[in-house]
Image (cartoon, rainbow, N blue to C red; front, top):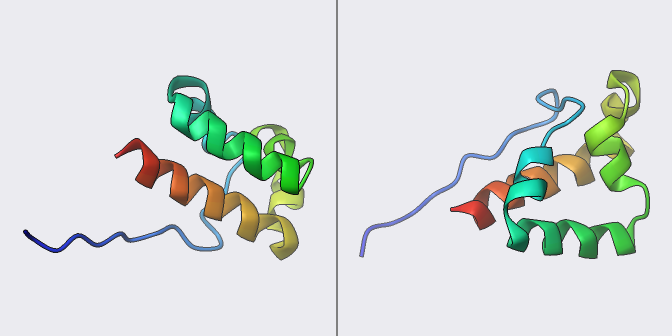
Length: 76
């Protein structure tokens, strides 16, 4: 079996709306995002509707990027 690696997005690549299509189209991603939202309320609003300034704040950027990166892995 070959090796698999992932190159994940870093801070600076965030944008409002990231991950929304994966959330809407893939039930496993929706479940993952909903579980994260239960732990950190407001994260999905930040990801899907937040302003650029709100998403540039590291305290928001890191969880939002993590969720989006994991969603891409789940989608695979």
